[in-house]
Length: 167
Image 1: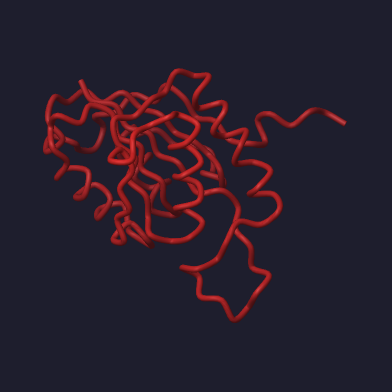
Image 2: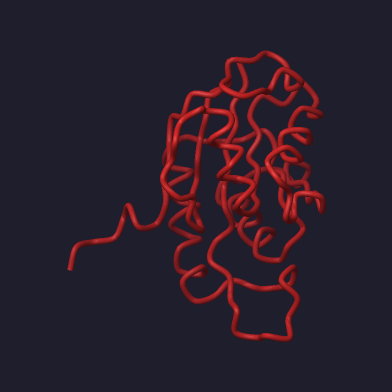
């Protein structure tokens, strides 16, 4: 049995219009939400064998925070430039190429690819996949190459607005 966590990067800044999308940092809300995302991930007992991150600055920042919070070793974080702006089919292909010794992978990336991949794997309509959201799934596969539509069971879908205190 394999396990997959999809994490959308924390909220990024549009403050500098000259900055390329790839290089955008986190904004104030992203910096606020990221520690809570990391803590909730750790508290839920989710501990991937490997974190794959898009090469975009906001995704790397998110992945590094999770990596640090979960106290993973340096080789358990891999930056994969192809994850930036990847469609669901590309994400699926990248995951299908993983070595089978990896049991649980966490993919830190972008929408709409993550949202579409989550829907494809679970065959369930989900809410929107907001920034700093975490979708965790158990997969009914024994080898990554078997990853396909409908093979996943959603076990967690967490995002910052679920934890806002009423005014």
